[in-house]
Length: 467
Image 1: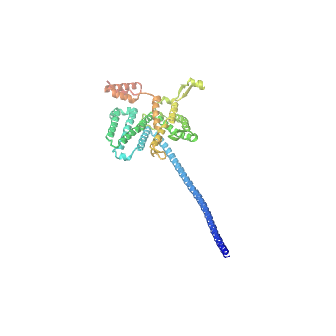
Image 2: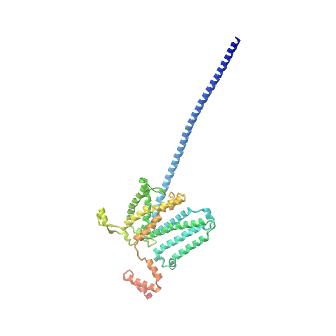
Image 3: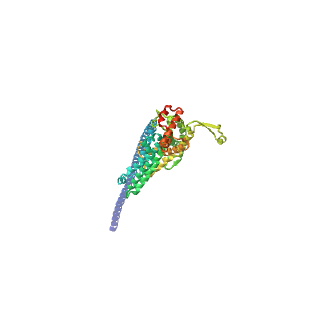
């Protein structure tokens, strides 16, 4: 009996302890489940927080992007207004200078050459090296001055020889102008060689080549543009205007119809804009040319340095400005059904189409050349001479080659060859003795009196000098 009681007590004790353990285990399980729930809640909270943070960061990014877009828009708009204001200011100033006379146009072109030279030299200058080389910048400007002296001297001597040659001092300068120019250049060349410094040879020779390339492309071509001005403002103003008009119309046509990229150097240039600009430029060139050609001040060669738009010029117009009758080729009549056998036009109208075509299809490559140069030196603009437009080089990159073409075309197909007073006078002075010069002048006076140009009393004044 006692053993049974003991067994029952032990079983009760075990059952009680098991229950307690089970209860404890159940409690632990509940705690664990509560922890899992808590973890789930924490995870959910983290996700919600991340969503909120993400949405707020996206909002911040969107705000920043919107603010950046607004700033860019305002900058572009202000830059557009600035460009527009300066464009009209430059057009007005240019027209005033054109009206002031040929000499003022040449002065303007000289200033442009100097500024363009300065801008192009600035992109390759390394100040640290230049400081160690004495007279380095001065030598570059010396070469520019020497080149300008030669170029301007050639033009003045050719067009105003009859005025310059009568002065004894100027006559000696005119006679030896090219030799003087050469001596001046040789002086700069010798100074360059004497100034070569160890450790800077490569840099100095690079600068020497760069300077001469600029002088050739800028001053060399500008020399021919100045000759165009002497032949008549028409041959300078119209070609320059055609380049500007083509730039505007190419931009507008490209914006409206542009689809196909033209050249990688200028990604914004399109084939459609290129062709559209050409067509518009030809039409505008013919219109402008037919308006300007009726003004003698524009078409007459410069023979009076004091000429202005108010004073005007008088001359016999070049035949290219006069209406002429031309026969229409037979193949045009037969194959195209052209109804007329002859047409009456001014030859200059054909030349204007050639100028417009060159300004539209060839001259822009001067701009592409400049774009490639800027990419090579990793610069946006050549300078900041014109607010909103960059440097003068950015605005005149197409003008130089266009003006050079007009000069060559004019003297090849348009210019009327004639003997100038200056050339005859130079021949008489340099080739005849004083006695021969007196006989020539006496014979010339007699001829003018016989034609009624001079009164007969002139011969009486010359009797004492007659041989």
